[in-house]
Amino acid sequence: MISCGDTSAGPELEPPPPEPEITTGTVEVTTSTSGNGTDDDGYSVTLNNNAKDIEINGTVTFEEVEEGTHSVELSGLGMGCTVDGDNPVSVDVVAEETVSAAFDITCEVSTAEGIIAFSKTVDQQFEIFTMNADGTNQQQLTSYDMQDQYPAISPDGQRIVFVRQDSESSTLDNDIWVMNIDGSNPQRLTDNTVDDKRPVWSPDGSQIAYESGNESFSIWVMNADGSNQSQITDDNGQDTAVSWSTEGDLLAFVSNRQGDDSSDIYTINADGTELDILIDANSNNGINLFDPAWSHDGSQIAYQGFVSNGALRIFIANADGSNAQMIQPDGYSNARQPSWSPDGNYIAFLELASSEDSDAIWIVETDNSNSVKLTDDQTNRLGFPNWGVIAE
Image 1: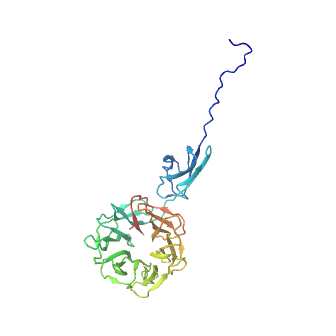
Image 2: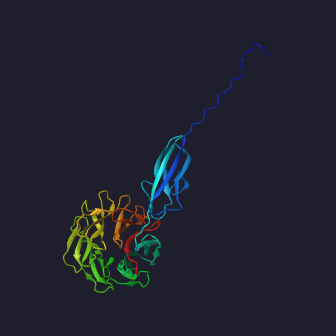
Image 3: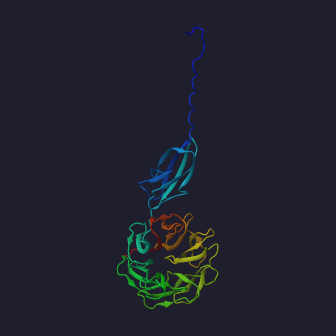
């Protein structure tokens, strides 16, 4: 019995458990899309293997993300759409706070005209394809058990000259062939015991220039039917990558004949006379130059060259070789094989990516603006874009 004066306490109550420490935050992802094109089905954004759909100008949030550094990646971009800046981006998540990851996307649709021929691997063999200048309507023209490469569209848009590997030769020589623009009626033009490669049409379509040789290559010219094959250059070095001037009187080509472990651009009359150096490789003009291509109005010449950081870039110079300017913007892995649009406002080029399955063909305006990616072939090698007119 407890008396009224008994003040003894009952059992002590345990203190409530401490609130759990919060170690997560929120990541807010935004997209902002500009340009003359759109990607109407939106994109996908991924954080820690968790993917969410996001509109082209939208916002999504990832909640309860553990504090620390995380990677956020945007994917599902349509043709002609590129992220301006890093992708993926890193975010540092702080507990109980919201951090942002913003992606600016530019979607550009090519307004250029014409048709582009190129090579693409099918079952690990290069075949000849064509597509519209906006990247649509890819058409496979050849189906061969060896390699078909180096397509060039005739000035009238009716035919394509290209190189086919000779399956009957024990040395796998390359020969030059021609076919209609739709791939029909292929005909062999050369049948030599050496490699014949990189054919280009004369401006009037009556002749074809090309390189030929084995250990040493020279520039040759023949009639468009394969007759009258004539050697134009004769040097112990490598004379390759020929281009025909708009007037038809000059050939530009690449040679290492100076013996300094680099290639320069030369010109020679189409009859083999008057050899001159046009562009000397150096830190301003690019190093180890290749693939010269005259503009259709004859006022400029484009080519590829290495820059100081070891990357390949596209340059444009005046027709006399002066005032060389790098026009292909930074951000691409390696840019090569320039080809002019018929109107002279664009350059098509190949982005040779660091991995073997992500080459791409781009076009860029000659003022270094409005770059548009035309292809998205993630499992194919690409090469040798050549831009021509659409046959009437």
